[in-house]
Length: 444
Ligand SMILES: *Cc1c(COP(=O)(O)O)cnc(C)c1O
Ligand SMILES: [Zn+2]
Image (tube, rainbow, N blue to C red; front, top):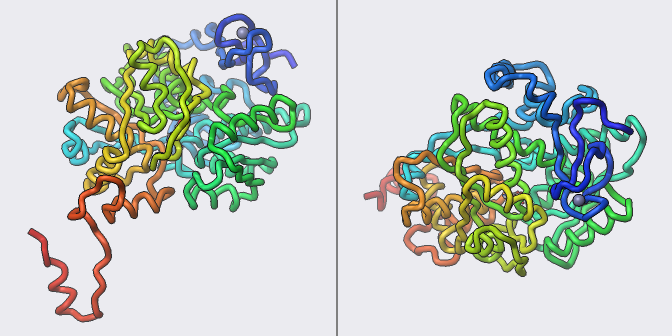
């Protein structure tokens, strides 16, 4: 299959080869082994001015005809140009709210805070943005040429939930490899409910990743991890949507939790493309938040993002970013150098405290989002983020996926929590006087 003129292609991220069709099942450069990127045709994209792109994107929204109503497919020219409508597998991803959160911000020491609620999505995490693109591409290829027989991923919980949902919507078989005991019960239920083959392995995420990469290399499955650049094409739309929600401006900072670092690379790619095509006039700075139990990027930041040394990831409440050997590290290092990036590492006590402060201010952060919120608190405290700077935190998943964590936050039973913050149900007889008394009891 030769790519059509104007189509996006796969190219070596180190620049030594390119022009591979995006529907080909290859995940690394056949010459040098580097990661692949999706390259768009600059001539095709350059035919519209920045103002024309803004007008086009502004003319599409949740009320548009399907599939343009999707936040991802409303930007389809930048994602997978030319994919026929009939191959699009959409569950209504994107168009997540950008919520001012001054009360949570004040509690963290930085009032100029907005939260982009990427977890308010079909499967409850931002992974939907990338999975709609990957599964649509596979559906197209299966219709045109047959195969691949199944899609598979290794997952810390959210990738597998999204993959299983989109595969079920498309009628494509899928298998998910999960580290046993390291995903939340809600995340385990999702692929089971969608009929995926769920393989629970006695290893951690990095161990699952090694196996699924080998399965993909031998051609047994098509690989759905973010090493596959098709996912990043969908995820990068979050940057464009964010700028659009701010009337085509960018905040001073975007904070996000980072694990495999695909989302970091995607976010920066989205802002860079929007700037290069004239939709915005600058890039925001990006701060990646890592759990101190799995923070190879933090060490890299301290060495000027020159390289990244994998670590063994230890236990953390932020299970979705418990990754010691991030697959997209080379992409992320390049992105962070371009965006004047920063990295914070956050301890268990700090993430629990940020989660509690923000939940008491109306947010419902998942543990990973709590790491990003804690990172903002730390960066503001040392003056790395200045009081008049506008900050957006990407909330990556919905707190409802992590009920055990939220319960521990409410009970004050996470490491380092204070006893006096405990909030538990008060058991009472069904009597008016007792209920009336209990409502104001202890309230200062
Ligand atoms: C996947 C995930 C992340 C990390 O994204 P990467 O692209 O792996 O860095 C962060 N938070 C949540 C909730 C996730 O599911
Ligand atoms: Zn190469």
